[in-house]
Amino acid sequence: MILIFCSDPMNRNAVDMDYEVEYSTARSLGITVGLINLEELLEGSIDKTLSRINTAGSQGSAIYRGWMIKPHIYEKLYEGLLKKNVVLINNPEEYRNCHYLPNFYENIKDVTPYSNWIQIVNLKNDFDQIYKNLAEFGNKPIIIKDYVKSRKHEWNEAFFIPDASDSIHAVQVINNFIARQGEDINEGIVLREFVNLEQISVHTKSRMPLSKEFRLFYLNNTFLFQFDYWEDSIYDNDKPDLTTFNQIAQDIGSNFFTMDIGKTVSGDWIVIEIGDGQVSGLPLESDIEGFYNAIKELVS
Image (cartoon, rainbow, N blue to C red; front, side, top):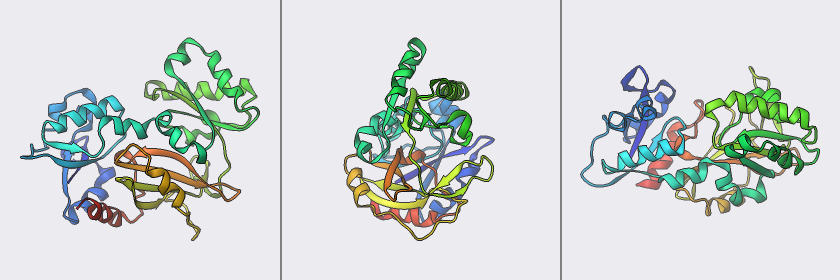
């Protein structure tokens, strides 16, 4: 197995500084590592992107550990590596399965807040659809995100809507979100019922509330590792029972993915979202060595 990291934008022979700890930790454990140039990948120069990846004599598996990329870009990366006999752990369809919320919502709908969504084409052609989607929530508080990401650090301006029935304010927040996402918006918008989570602290910069959340990694649908989601917060010893989440993981169409979970103020544990494991971040102040050792044990 090979771990493929993004190189430094200014030095293609060095790893991106944000992944330096992961890269050096993996190497110290004897895991083969490689570098690709993200900028060239985004520009469509796949040969230049993969110039530092050697062609293998026979097919071998790989895990990409880098910045989030859109599915059509991931597909180019997957196909380019395949020509070098390097097979990413998730094929393009499996990447999409955990990248876009509508793709995995059915798997988690019983343990996640109610959600609906609108594709970009409908946003442009029929803004009335937003009012219809808002109406499904009554006067409940909701949040706005796209199919992948939110702007939760802009809590009041482009994320949180206290009352879905206040259409004037709701549309203002939604418009802020759409405008600020700009060309980076992913496929469409998602409206989700807001559920109060058990708060543990407040973000030092944005002042957004930080809740008791954990990131679970799964490899081959088997639980791999658990991280505290917020690295700048102090967690107590209250840990979730993973039985339900491990059962859900059996039906996720991906070989390597994350499940972010949180504890509500009523004491229930819910799924916040699913993500492709290759582009899901690790807290820097965490057991990264333990994480990569766990990967070695499962793939050896």
